[in-house]
Image (cartoon, rainbow, N blue to C red):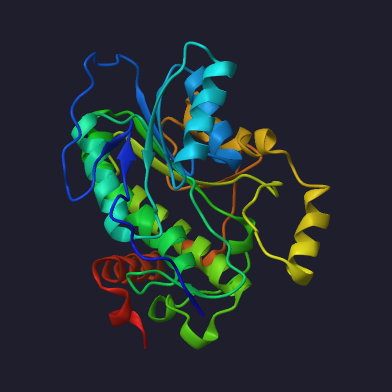
Length: 315
């Protein structure tokens, strides 16, 4: 088991200024009249292409990523593709819930309305990695962080209604099994089980959220982008070789962004909520995600884990 690096003092930067420790970021000198879209994992992979698509559609896009150089490169790339685009860059390590909460405060201090939230950031680890808060990094990044960030941004999403939450899922969730009492896998951890279960749990809390948002004008859906040749799997050995072989037949990043953008922009998804989408079509999810009682148990378990220090979650 590896421990991730220490929580850096300067964990959050938005347009070159600190936004840590709950500090309010000043409002822009000129308020944008464009609708606001927030994209996590927006500095690379399909997140960069999703951000580009939203910018082309007329949104002011807030990109959230871990690496400032990659984030600024993504901003410059979007500007070259779409000269009229406007973007903000927020640097945050979303495997750390304290940083996720600070990111949420930053966004809310700058924008009172958010029309689209795309929960795209995710990790696939080949071995267990523990964050400085004591959480498993896959669980924290793929489930707890989007849960925390979405909850924090709900007031701005409601204020912008009609608004959309698009959460990036995975077909690896389709056949896995989940127990609300064992979201923390501990000794049962394997890379496939950790990733697939985190994505199924993410789907289930999204469905639970969609029910809580009924009548608000905010919809929440899960999208599988397809098998995309991205840098999600960064490992060597047999796993790395297998992934590189699959990448030869996988979708490009631009193709992988198509269905998430469709869910974020298409008129037919303006009122459709609590569904699983593949190739622009609503499909049947894992049957466990259709069990209302189990879905609520997963919501409660996720809520508890997100509020607890990681060391308190270990069985």
